[in-house]
Image (cartoon, rainbow, N blue to C red; front, side):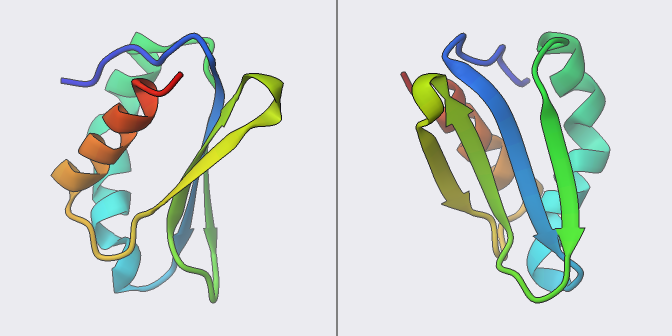
Length: 90
């Protein structure tokens, strides 16, 4: 189960490629997006698919600080763990 995001997080962005490297992240979005938005209704959660990139998830915190985690080749459960780690950041 996903937790509510830390108040310091202002936005989460997922950049996905069109290939297999993003398959787990894409499945995570299909499976968990509704739950994520229900737990964090005011939080912008942006998903973009682009060609020729490495899949990443970026959390933007207060004062413009950003933390980027790679998503290439991760399973949906691993993407959820990465997201929860970002939620716990201050």
